[in-house]
Image (cartoon, rainbow, N blue to C red; front, side, top):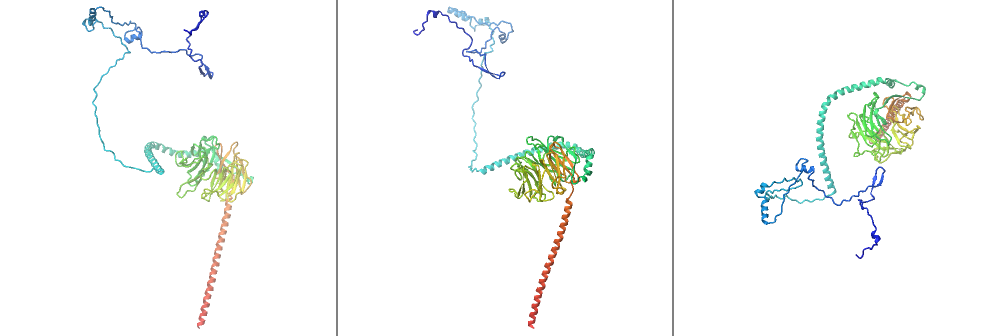
Length: 619
């Protein structure tokens, strides 16, 4: 060709060697894979060089193999031969006819001489067999019905009509649910009846033994702690005669339940009907470690084990026992719920518990208070929380109702202020007192004086107020954060407070207006949280942050009843005033009668003189 390259003889004689390899020139050389051992990507050293051009799967079997013999049904080791007919070529037509006659398959000779070769079984052959059946003749059936009645309907869909339709649908669903519940309840009642029939006999025996066992347990406890029982009933500290005005407190029983470990005493309340029974609320003031709580009832007759136990899912922060119905207990929880427990009912669930639908608080409930029943004899209690949707006031931490005025109450707040409020004015405060620099932990009205109340706070102070004055009458600095304060039920001037350094302070304003009569440390390295006076006996109970409640007896100097002398003076004063009013009233009556008689006599005189004058003229 004209474009062919011309080479010299040396170039043509030059030998060029080329080595053919099985490597694929198109195979990738940059493949990397992740190494879990070295935790990094490494290049792949081995690359697949095989290139596949054609693949076809075959189904042929070698005839001398064992597999072929199995297909033929022959024993292994025998040779397999396949016979084919031999055909010889024929030149003449006659010979061809003879040959055709010889090899005609229809002839008898060929049939006699012919040996049928054994046909091999081919497992891969496919034979198709089919059969055709008669087709049924087609049939048609038809029917005609009367057309449904038609009517024209039109309506306007308004918002309230849509709402009513949804309400009706919800009512239907609720009715269906109630029917299902009634059916299920009937089944459950039947099952319970069967179980009760079996359990009644056992429960009767247990109940008969239960009361006796409780009495025996109290007897054993009293015998075990006989010295404490004797101190409670008879001991009077004779050293008070040499202390002057000072007094002491004597430790008595210590109450603790093993399952209340790591829980603090968050509330204390005595039962007004049974003076030996008191309730304890257990929880935690540490907001980072919130969990379970417990409501426990103890009796002075048995300090070893509680009388009633109610475990709760949230910490108990406050409680109050109804004065008239002492079996009802209102409880406030850390999660914002309030509940009412009935001691007469069996089980550990409350008879009432607030939910999000019924208006539960969003912050912890700090105080609950029972109040007088309404006109329909419904039991009422009030709660205060630090959320903005409290039952009575926002950001409240404590509250107390007036002992004599039904509508008046006090509320302590987180800001340290105390608001005097009325149930008739729910949007306005009657008075605001700038009480403390920290949240008000407790505020309580005096049991005897209608104008006096007391408050305490973590700012180390206890203050006594007259609600008609904006400034406190007394301020006491206890040199530690005050956990709780309480008025004594036997005197209007005695109160006690507990501080976080483990000290109990008892004051009597009638004796000393500046210093406590008793200042006694009762625990070490622990905080005191609450204190309560017994309504009848001269004892107090104190709770701490370990879950322990300890009872103390007040010495004679701390429980002087000054109220008797004051009340006697008041009665004498009332008698004098009554006599004075009685005398004044009759004196006024006497003056009035004398004045009327004087005017009556003067009128009679005038008429008499006039009558004499007229008669004298006629004469």
